[in-house]
Length: 89
Image 1: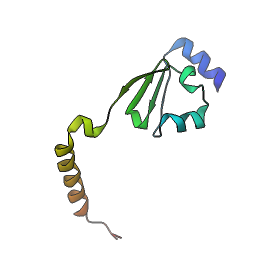
Image 2: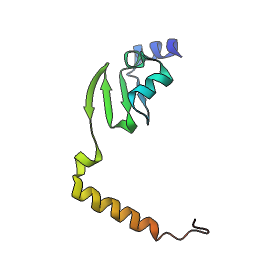
Image 3: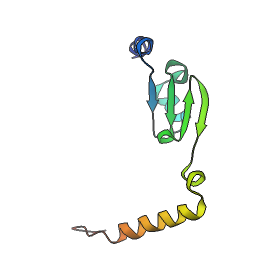
Image 4: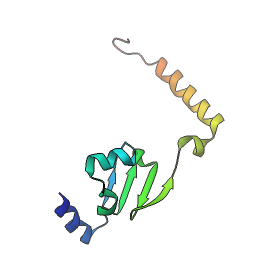
């Protein structure tokens, strides 16, 4: 896989997207993953690394603000509570 990624990287930019934080991605793909690919997107893309350096960090709370986020979460929970399922447990 390392050889394939090296050859692929000569032709196109390569990125890894993971749901975990960077430490977990390194545990799964190797400590040097951030140097073997062009981009690493940790935490479902909320934390971005570009060419081995931290590029950006985003959070839904910072983006929406606490008040709007609370309203959004309440809307979602209310909506989900009204869904009819064959068996709700």
